[in-house]
Length: 431
Ligand SMILES: C[S@@+](CC[C@H](N)C(=O)[O-])C[C@H]1O[C@@H](n2cnc3c(N)ncnc32)[C@H](O)[C@@H]1O
Image (cartoon, rainbow, N blue to C red):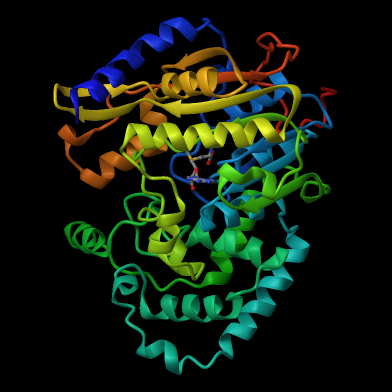
């Protein structure tokens, strides 16, 4: 790296001091599992907690408003918005994110789901599996017994290229039970819910003497359905949501100009995570090619490229936002190896600088979110992935909530939320 660009990165530290108003937030008072049971339909590494989305939705929008997440991941923001009587809009470039966001926001009731599941399992039993036998499924066989894999392969064949609401929901359920660390899942007991490499899982299974269980899809899928519906699901949820798949530099392709009242989002932070690797089995399930999926995502370590990417995203967000509105961007600090040694890059400050100097947004402030890092899925993921103390990349990192304004919105103060009694569905509140 040249001296000048390294200097430029170093100067980014100062931006925080200039732009940060010491904003307050109470969302961290929420208990760890706060949130509607549908949020837990299937895992999404790198996601933020429902309480965080809930907090900003309560603070900066009212009932009937439209809330957008242009990098929706597991769909936390659109689901939370719809549960709170807002319209929940979402976009993501990644297929798994799209399917999961859509499934969560358009759930099937158990009286719809159970007969649908049975019909599909019946169709699956009749699939001619001669061709499947010839496929190289060696990596999958590390996770599944022949009995279970046969069911998975057949059902996958039946759902292939079906993007109806029902099939999408079943795909969401399947992504939630494919593999994981308990008897709830179809696989042998993996260390976590991310898709480990076959090699890693092979060694892990050997070390812990784990056997591949003979499990059936039906009871596991019904149990997942039951858990997802532990909290009441409002009937009109799906009507209030719109989920699209695309590059968030072009939001106007999917959303009307000035149609959004609030953005709550967490854009990618450089190369912190490769969503395609840690979801490779889910991508296989969805019949998506890992490499072409990866090419769609913005994964770069280069700060200049990242700045350009974020600048284009900011312009795109500005276009869809209504006059006098707010955008909240949650980003983590990133560890970088510079010639001068390791240092932490303040991603929020970089985006704030781009927003202030290169777009029409104003920077209202940054909330530094120095909460318990151990509860963050991506931190846990990196520990598992590398399994070495010294590779804990995010050790000193913190998350920051950057608040941008378009025009002159009425900036609400910190809402007084009692997280012990706060409703998951917004039915009891008039906001
Ligand atoms: C930090 S995650 C968002 C997590 C989300 N807030 C949640 O709670 O699950 C960032 C997301 O950005 C998506 N992404 C990366 N590049 C993108 C692009 N160019 N356009 C749209 N989405 C993109 C990734 O697929 C990923 O889901």
